[in-house]
Image (cartoon, rainbow, N blue to C red; front, side, top):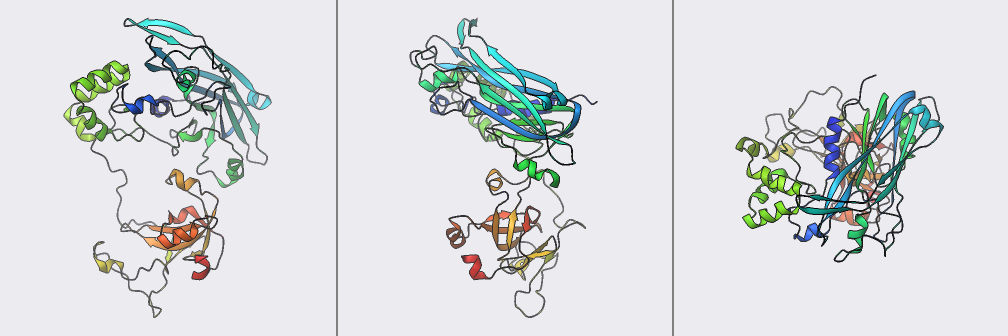
Length: 449
């Protein structure tokens, strides 16, 4: 049985854990650093900040009863620095629950998490940590049918109770500041299996689709990590399967949707006084300032970017979905430009008619007016994923300069469909991400309705 290798998964999980921990310009006095802790907050029961107390992960697994599941629950616990409570640092906490699949199928495995309150001195500064109570519940159930799959369920609960008049509401602290000191911050799970494999919830095999639809994830988004499909990262941030840390990155910058080069340049542009305040704000801020100031030229140059999608403009793909063209003039075949015509030459557009061209999908010619079901793949963004399984009307079949095709659609139940049609604001999908639901296209009048 191959041992789990969590090293790569931990790198990605750490990026999720510290997302938004500290924002540029990395000073405690910066306005946006007064409103931290946005991701994966599990507040004590009874707190009125709007943060939930429970996080639930459900994912699919193929394994027999002897397979071993490891659940690594990870979060930050806050420590308040100084008597005036001007800044909270986050201390990573990890708890592991290990059980065989057979045990999880027979009943819940429950693990309490108790972190006592404490005070300590570091560098002549007093740090205070509030007590924290939580619980992890892990269970599994066999799926009906012949495929042998399981649904794994992981529940993380903050079981502490909030008393608005109790500890934590010190002078100068807002209600949310005080609640966060009794909360799990950036809560997420790394789940590994020895002797089995996880099933993608983004691109499941056909047999697993009904089970995927039955998974209920609350505050989390489970994705596969690594190349053996034996690890899942379930975090409050939406990712694709198999996420990786860009090799060009020299270290964490904590700022949401960070672009290393821009943030590095901005950090270098801080005044000496601003850098000094950032260093005094948090040890992780000090590490950022030191790193960017000492960054070698060759490391800085590689931050400028990388292209990972280079390929031939006209690849030889025998498995490509064939495109069926409709003559644009109604009088014989449309004339296509040859391979010598540059993409920016107007002649390159000769013969292309998005409102008449079609693409063959599952043996059906899909063109303007066709009805399709949306099945976004791994390259879709979060907004596209919200439309998964919905019916849409095709408005055009488009081609880009690399020879790829795109299906422009409007969801039929979109209340703003008329406005989308009028403005030309369509959703775009690869032909592999749509399924035809009608063999004959509707006319233009039906498309406009």
